[in-house]
Image (cartoon, rainbow, N blue to C red; front, side, top):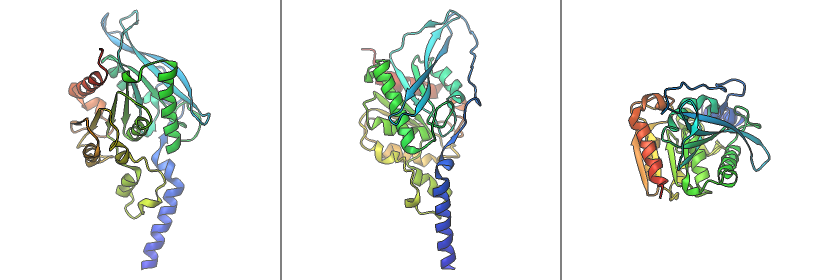
Length: 284
C-alpha cells in the first residue's frame, strides 16, 4: 500500500513536471482573437483608444508583439494629454486582443497603456516560460523608458492574475511609480498545492513567488481581489497584502468571478484604479 502511494506521488509529480508549462500558460495564437477592434463614436467629448502595433526584442532575441494604446477624443481623434502610462501584464490565457474592453475603459482615466503578449501568445515568437515572461516584461519596460522616453515617475505596472507575478518581478528590477496586482496568486507551488495536493511542492519548477517579492518592494501598491474568485483564492490576495511592505492599499472587489472584474467591478473598481494611478503620478 505504501509503495503504491509513493509510486502514485512520483508518477504524478513527473507527469506534472513534463506538462508543467502547458498547465500554467494557455496561449491563443494569431489570427484567433479580436485584432481589428472598432469603437463607437459617442460624441465630440468621447474618449476612445488609439492602438499602435509595437514590436519589442527580449534579451534573448525573441520578438514580442505589443500594443501602445493612447486616448483620443471625438470623431477627429484628437490626442488627449496624459500624465501616466500603465504597463499592463495580462493573465495566463488568450492574448492581448482579448483585453480590448479593459483598454477601452482605462484610457478614460486618461492614461496611455502598453500591453504586450508573452512569448508564444498572439503574434509573439517563442514558447511560454517563467523566465521568458520576465524577459518579455523587461523588454516592454525598456521600450517605454528608452524609446518612448517616459520618465519612471510616470510609469505604473499593472498585473492581472498570472500577470501579477510578472508585474511584481519587473517591479523588483526597476523603479515604477506604483504597482497594481489584481487577482494574483502567492506562488505557483501554492496554487499547484490546491489543485494537486499529492505532489510535493519542490517538484514544481515554475515558482513565480510574488509573496517573497512583495515584501521588499517599496513603491506604492494596490492589491485587488474578489471573495468570489473561483480560480485564485481570495486568501491569496489577503496574504499578499499582509506580506507587502508599506505603502499599500487593499481593495476587496465585489463578488466577481476571476475573469469578470471588468464587467462586474462597476464604477468603484475603475475609480480605485484611477485614484491610485493619479496619486502615484502627480502632475506637479
